[in-house]
Image 1 (cartoon, rainbow, N blue to C red):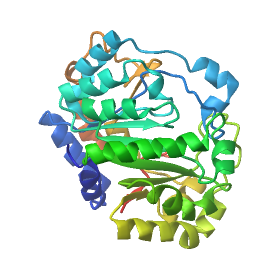
Image 2 (spheres, rainbow, N blue to C red; image 1 turned 45 degrees about the vertical axis):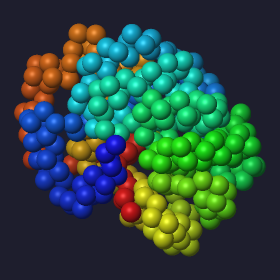
Image 3 (cartoon, rainbow, N blue to C red; image 1 turned 90 degrees about the vertical axis):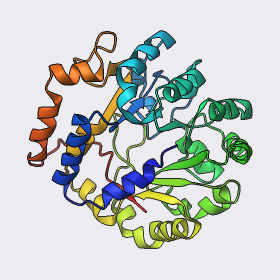
Image 4 (tube, helix red, strand yellow; image 1 turned 60 degrees about the horizontal axis):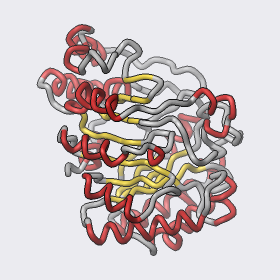
Length: 339
């Protein structure tokens, strides 16, 4: 297992985006792994979290579809050979796919250095977790948007706080059998759950060892039921609420993915942000589309598509490109410091 977070931390020390793009271009030319494949094998969810587009009935109706395992095999043949990381689950709930562990095993067959599963954890049994670890899963990311029963079940509609705690206990047991198995907690911060962050060590940290903690400021993704996207309180309470959690992560040697105060302010003001790295490395795959609009995983491969569309030259040109103004409500994926 390759330490992806160490690589990202080292990369974050390089402040010049042009230098980073030069590195990506060189990896592309040399045939090295540099893309992250973010894979939703099924577009469905068992929950209706208020901050998610699955809480929007119209959007939910349009977000449907499931890959057959035969399709997954074609996708893996097309893309997995250049993947540095495979993240299964990017908004939808991957545990609804009947071949989940076969997808994990396929990732390992293609020698992807790091495979992660992002889930709400409500459907996972201990046996399923253990089987996933045996199949080669390196990390499980559990999404939680509250650390009291009231807030958790209010924000994560149809979710049960007791099942969340039960899943943590199962993960603890699996980690005992697989010492390299990582737990990442994904906490999306809004004005209703910000103050609960201080409870994380009592609720989670004392139950199971956290390896990575991600604190994500709320962003508007579709017409979600939740409508309070003001991050002013988050910015104003950063030193009092978020900074102590960062310090405790440092003390416990937990990798912490968290935006700076300046990141939060930039998002609030919709400042120009450099998306070249994201565009070059982010590869999203779902039943609605695969990577590029004109990429056909049944006939194309990363190599053939790159050659036909002169991707190497486009990456070279991107090194010297200027930052572009993004549309309002742009979702930013790489606006974190790694501590």
